[in-house]
Image (cartoon, rainbow, N blue to C red):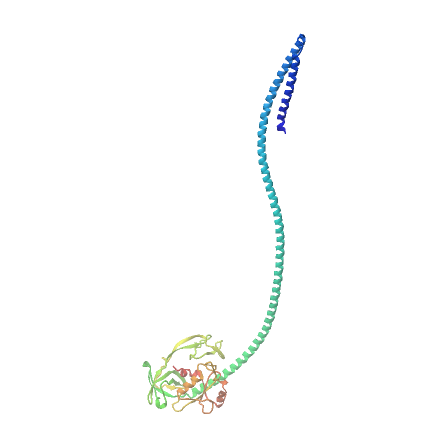
Length: 429
C-alpha cells in the first residue's frame, strides 16, 4: 500500500488542477463582462486579472513542479513496480522454497513419527527378545541344573560302585595274596620234592655211571670218532651218544655229543654233533642255561639260589654246541645214551598229564609225550602204558605229580629222569 501512495497523490493533483483551472476560466469570463464605462472598475479588474495571471503562472509553476514530482514519483513508481516484480519473483521463489521447506518439514515430521513408531516397535521387539532371552536362560539354567543333578547322582553312584569295587578288590587282593602264598608254598614244596628227586638221580648217576661203550679212535680234525659198538650191539645210524670221562670221585665230565653215521658189525663211525644254539640267560644274574630248552633260572631275584621260578627272559647267548677244544674227545672216553643199552632193552614210563588240546600239551616242557615216545622207541627201548616193576626209568614232564602213576613209581623206587636232561637226545633233526 505504501508503494501506491505517489500514484494516488498524482491523481488528486490532476483533479485539483482541473478544478482550479475551471474556476479561473469562469472568473476570467466574469471579468471580461464588466462595464467599460467604469474605468476604475476596469483597472481593478485588470489588476485582478494580472494577479490572477500571476497566480495562474504560480499555479502553472507549481503544476510544473508537481509534474516534476509526478515524473519523479512515476520513476519511483516504476522502480517500485520493478521492485514489486522482483519482490514478486523473490516471493514466488521464497514461496516455493517455503513450500519445499514445509514438505521437508512434513517429511521430517513423518520420518520422526515413523522413527517414533519404529522405536516403539524396536522397544517392543527388544522387550520380547529380552523376555525370550531370559526365558531361554532360565530353561538353559534349568537343563544345566538337571544335568548337574544327574551327573552328581551318577558321580555318587560311581563313587559308591568304586567303593564297593574297592572292597571287592581288597577282598580279592587279600584272597589272591592268600592264594599266592598258598601256591608259593605248594610250589616251594614241589620244588623241594623236585630238588630232592633230582638230587637223588644225580647221586645215582654219580655212583653208578652207566657206560654203553668206548671211543676207540678219535680224529677231531677230520670230525671222525669211532666207537666199539656196531650192529651186533643194536647200533643204528642216527643214534646219538654223550661222550664223557670219569674223574676221581666217580665224577662225570661231559665232552660232547656224537652221532652215528656208518655202522659195521662191531664198530661204528660217528661225527661230532654240532649245532648253533641260543642259550637263555637270567636277566638278574650271570646265569646262562646249559641247554636252549631251559625256561627258568635256578636263581631268585636276589641272585641267590632258591625255589622260586625266575624266567630266563634276557637276550639269549648264541653259541655253537660241539666239542670243547680245551678238553677234546680222545680214545678211551666213554659213551652213553639214556635210551640205549648194549645188553638189555629198557622200558620207560612218561609221567605227566598227557591231555593234548588243539595241539598243545600243558605238561610238556619242550616236547610232547608222543614225540618222546617216538624217539625212545627209535633207540629200541619200550614205553609202558602204566607203572609196574618192569619199568626201568620214569621220564618226568612238567608237574609229573598230576599223573597218578608217578606217585606209584616213586613208591617203587624207580629212577626218575626229567625231560630237560634228555633234550640233546630228543632233539631229532
